[in-house]
Length: 211
Image 1 (cartoon, rainbow, N blue to C red):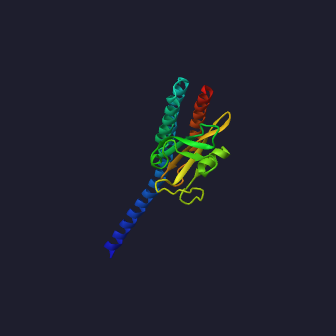
Image 2: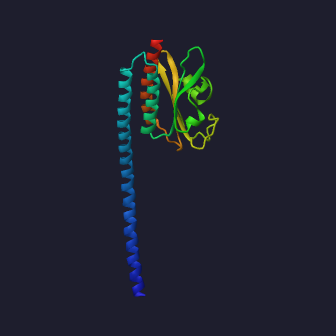
Image 3: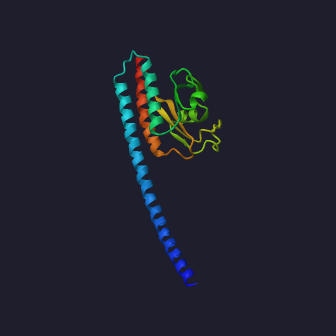
């Protein structure tokens, strides 16, 4: 009985010690997670800044006589955003013809290449893309599978982010990003994507000036 009591005391002490370690470890892990998240965010911002700088350089040296330059800017912008923000799906849709009320898909990444082919056309007053184009305001969809505004349900797409592309004459296009994770997008993503949208707006303005 004495041995059993001693053994119980030892086990209790070990349990209390381990419990303390677990509590301390959990607390430290939480701090590490916050630090890690902040570190990742700063690295993402740096990468995005570098890619934006590349796009600006391309835009500043763009010859107005080169019709392929604008397409190159679209592709570079979407590819950069996809890598930096770690999203696998996205599109850039633009209203290039002022006479029509249609948005034309000019660049795609990920599974959207299967669902929204290049040069696909969408009305400017329909769907999420049309809503953002009409209102001129960014939109976050936390879960596309339960949001009634999302008519097409795709297994690989859960949350969505859409940001308008504007020029001095108003909204001319929409950048759309998708993630397989619920509640993936935040205000940070909107702010970064708006920077790219401004650059694309300037590129489109230059194209219109050429015309």
